[in-house]
Amino acid sequence: MVVLVRCIDNTCTLALEARLDELINDGMITAFLHEGEWVRIDRNLPRYLYAHSIRAERGMSAMVSSF
Image 1 (tube, helix red, strand yellow):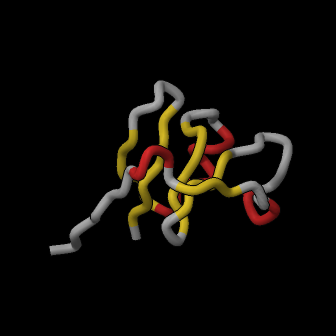
Image 2: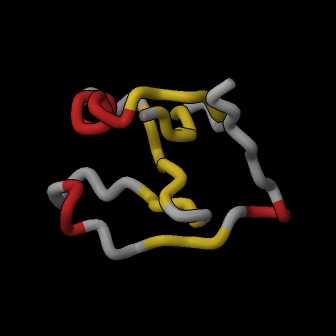
């Protein structure tokens, strides 16, 4: 499965969900989209403890097609 991620230069791109931990540990992303909300990366916490989520900024939304 793919997820929308926000890179350190504030661009957004798709990434494999299975590689999220690696991208987070390497400092490549600052947030990822989960259930319609951006989840900010706190590098001091393991991913399963991320509790700080924010709504999509400026009404930005993304549609990912699997066709």
